[in-house]
Length: 72
Image (cartoon, rainbow, N blue to C red; front, side, top):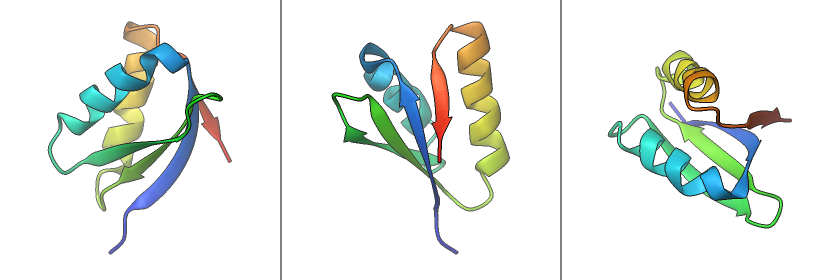
């Protein structure tokens, strides 16, 4: 099975925090910055973790105030 890749736009100053948070859950997801000026990131989600990662992103947006916008 392959990782699912999703693009998101976030505030530039939040990229490091988001990367650290997601990658602290070992093996669940990896964050790559696709365009640092546009603050476009790609999250590679390990098989079986899609719902968990999306719930975590929603929680970070709600509880921490992160601005996370899904991109197509």
